[in-house]
Amino acid sequence: MSIEKKIEEFKDDLELFDDELEKYQFIIDLGKKLSPLDEKEMVEENLVQGCTSKVWLVKDKKNDELIFRADSNAAIVKGLVYIITTIFSNEKKDDINTLDINILDKLNLTEIITPNRQSGVQGMIKKIKEYAKEK
Amino acid sequence: MYKDYFPYFKNSNIVYLDNAATTQKPQVVIDEIVNYYSSYCSNTHRSNHGNANKATQNYEHTREVLKKFINAKEKHEIIFTKGVTESINFIVNSYAKNRFKKVIISSLEHHSNIVPWQIANIDFEVVKCNENLDFDYEDFENILKENPNALVSITHISNAFGKIHGIKRITNLAHKYGAKVLVDGAQSLTHKKTDVQDLDIDFLAISSHKTFGPTGVGAIYIKENLLNDILPYQTGGATINDVTYERSILLDSPFKFEAGTQNIAGVIGFGKAIEFIEELGYENIEKKEIEIYTYLYEELSKIDDIIFYSDIKNSIGSLSFNIKNIMAEDVGILVDKMSIALRCGHHCAQPIMKSLGIEGTIRVSIAFYNEKEDIDKLIIALKKAITMLKD
Image 1 (tube, one colour):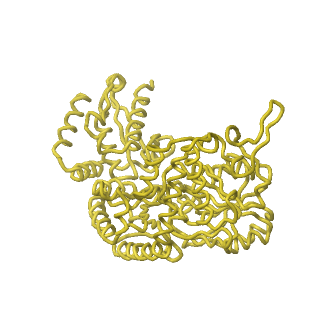
Image 2 (cartoon, chains in turn yellow, red):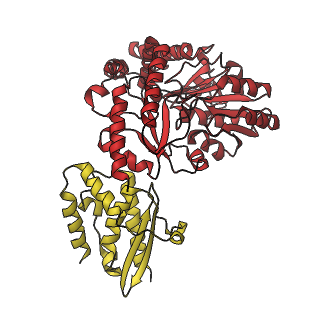
Image 3 (tube, rainbow over the protein chains, first blue to last red):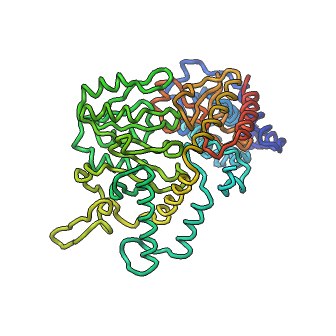
């Protein structure tokens, strides 16, 4: 599934909720699906810059596709982490690099997520793109 | 209801419990600011026309009001600043630099009373606190013995935990060892009468916006006998008596310290805020706050897995806690969606958070206009947020 298609699917899911708290509950529940990172992966070099809470992000490679795994110490951020890692995982480096979309805007999450947290998500995307640029 | 004095509560359905960050403004303060801008906006201490005189008089009236409010001896002991942060930076740069080998601070200071000392390369010692976050006077005296003639810079009431420091005991001890005392009054004037003569304070940093006045205004009180030791760290317009290309002669305090055009409307509005507090009376404010604070503590105590970081003895205003296995920020986001405004995080006091081994806390900070029903709504929202966040 393309990155754009995955974004569309999350958008459709999130639009099912008119009530903001229900939307948050959905995001929190998504976070519970994340597999926890190994303790030795939760180190400084894997920390994402710009998050008010802690987010650790690691990449794996499968053939020519990247897989991202991540964890956070905050429940709502975990949900966002799930969304972002799902969107970018199992994709080719070039597809990740060339993507130029404000994902939070696209998902209509900018209204419910504070600017601090938005910069955290942008930090995650930036780190994902940095990984994708590595040779 | 005290809320009736504040238009915010007529225009918003938010349960406002973030008073340590800033307080709401009464209508009389807003009217005063509007009146300045809409009917006599002029610069102070310069022009001689009628409105300029009126602006100068009203600006200076605030100095008089503030002098009485904190029981300073003289008007010229009061210098207007942008707020507590500027007041502390003023003391750092105009007085403390090159004069003190050591500054002594408490473990509950916010960043405004840590960072300026570091940036100015002035070493500081931190006084320990006990497990209830109470100030350790014995440790303080030992530090004073090791560092006589130091500068003590200490908050009166901590913003993160609401803990009250015993300022009179602190100034007595400090002066015994030749130290001077700067008190950060950012949180205290909202809740308590501060008498600089009775407490024997050398410097008091004052905030307007945390005391029901406008933002961008504050003051520094300087005990008269210290005024001659202080040189302005900024000069220019309004600070001088006579200027030639060869030399400049500065005016006396406070004018030599108030360079440039000040926040005139803000200062005038601040004066109104102080008069408003005086009219209500601190006895009434304290009585109401203790009632709400105690109720808050009792109701929070009924929540499972709550972790308080201090007891409520010797505290006022702010109450900090966490819920086991839940991040404070998650709670903050969810209760915000239920129209509850509070602050979650490190509250600009990262060192003490690190000492406690936490990222931050959920902080509820009250003012006298809060009612028990605000606390009831908070508890309902907190319980719902906790249910959402629990596994």
